[in-house]
Picture 1 (cartoon, rainbow, N blue to C red):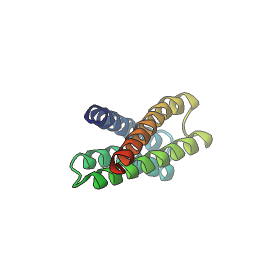
Picture 2: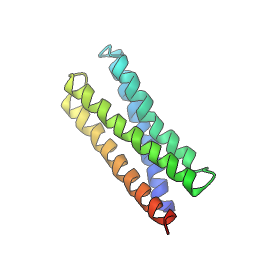
Picture 3: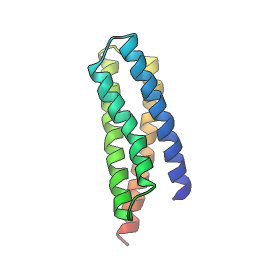
Length: 121
């Protein structure tokens, strides 16, 4: 699980950078401040929670942090879709960042499932 953990850490950090840049674009160019702030909060929380999980006090604490990161990733996907459907994000920008978000969701689902299985043994 260490290798996967490093992957999730690197990908969630890179995703947070993309989210910060998307927020800057939405605020500066699109003059959109409400939805983009929600996107910024949830999109950067994913990596912060993954980083916190590396110093979890127990396996249950690790699982809890990863579960919350998964919830934040799902919320981020929602805000991205809403920004696309309200025409603040162009389809091509949405597709690019959405692929990364869905990849994070898949990784987090895998980590959460395997942690639940190992805790139930």
